[in-house]
Amino acid sequence: MTDADYPKIAAPIDKRAAPADWFRADAHPGDIYRIGRANDILQEIFGRVMPRNGFKQRGDQTDLAMEILANFCERGILLAEAEVGIGKTLAYLIPAVITRRARLNEGKTRSVTSSGYPAPIVVATSSIALQRAIICDYIPALSDILTAGGIIGAPLTAALRKGKGNYLCRRRLNHFLQFADARAKKLLQPILDSNVVDLEFFTNLTPYIKSHISVDKICNKHCPVRGDCRYRRHIAAMNFAVGSLCESNKLLPGKIQGRGGLDFQVTNHNYLLADAIRRANGQPSLLQDYQAVVIDEAHKFSDAARGMYGFSLDYSEICDIMGSARKLKFEKGDKTGDIGDSTNKILSRSGKLFRYLNDNATAGETDGEVERYATRITDNAARLIRELRDNVSKLIEIISIKRVSESQKHRMINVSRELDAAAETLMAFARHSRLIYWLEERENAQSSSEIRLSALHGIPKNLGESLERHLWRGNIPIILTSGTLSAAGNFTRIKCIC
Ligand code: SF4
Image 1 (spheres, helix red, strand yellow):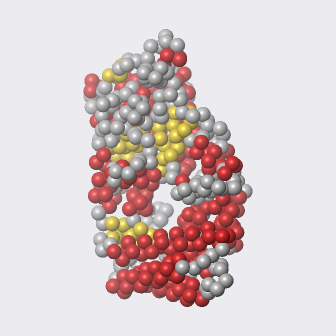
Image 2 (cartoon, protein in one colour):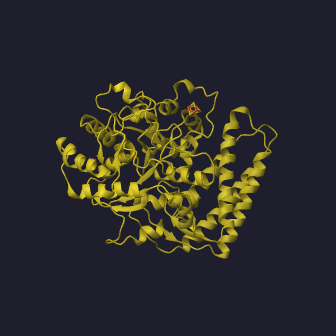
Image 3 (spheres, protein in one colour):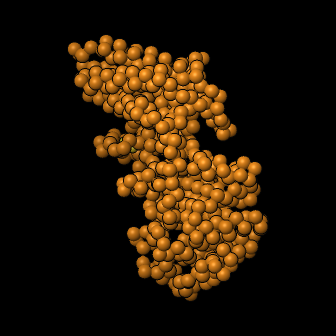
């Protein structure tokens, strides 16, 4: 875009008007004050306003921000690799503020919410650390600077969006602890010692434990700790004026977002993808309608896509589920011998399957954090998977006709749910012929020397087509940014993966 192409910012707010008038429902609350071209405002922010507040002026940063602003307006997909130290976060947050507050995309797809406010910008990251830094450091500081500098008429607002499965349910934790073994209790001790509600802070929890202590799909109405539930208080404080929830784990009372709607929704890659899939399938969305997306830490985005579209089966999780099934206590007269036989068969067959896959794995690629070992599902492996699926289905059947006491009901529901999920995964592995398979070693897993790689993963070969359909083709501007997107300036790999 040339300078002349940048949209002119219209509908300025009358600076002399009383603040209350800026927030009239029919006004443009908090819009950009200035009249001018968007790129002039951007230059002014980077050239004068930020340096006045102690930020160093950096040509690379301003150039990147100009590219990003242009992409927000042209509504394309931009791959923006940014060297460490360039100031990438501000290079996308500032154009995002200008785009939203100056209503640069008015009239375009999803640029306005149902309440008539400019739709927010989504920032999706891989790590909780960056989400926190954006919510607690970057946006509040930027909000103060732009407000004091007379650039925007009202402070910036943002909300952190994550799925229920990321939060601790105290009732489920209490229940899980009653039956947990020493290893699980040790892993859970840091949660008991803290006041944190966000499970992403506890990176050593296994998916199995996480699924048993996180908030369920339906929150229990008769929960005895409902009045003092950290999760509910956290959610109540979620839509907040930036800064009010900065120490989110301390549950500061949040100020509900001001009039004018949200500027930002900060989320993780998985939640963004889950939202995109639901929208494409005509289901209710998870995120509020948004007008543009920034995918930061984009080199990790393919991992999220693999997790979202793929399937995984974990040997140590199967062992955990069998352990829970064996501990179930039934009413007098209901024998447990058949459960013992059935769980033995499942353990033996899954051991056989994973030993076979480990023996046939070939050293694979690594992205620095995860090492992947390619494996093929031969006829023998496919047979073991089908037999394992039949064994799991049989155990589900056995458990379903047993009677348990009231105190065991919740436990039985959990075991049945885990078994259903395992059966579904095995079904998916058995059904799909067009999958790419690999094995990974899982941290904290119960592995043996023969089964070092305890997690089997599979993703559809047409993953790229699904992403195209669900996300890239949505006519919403998307910026993918990271310090490491290319290999020596070549972006082919990220383009292929995504
Ligand atoms: S109120 Fe809901 S989320 Fe909170 S502890 Fe109880 S069941 Fe869990």
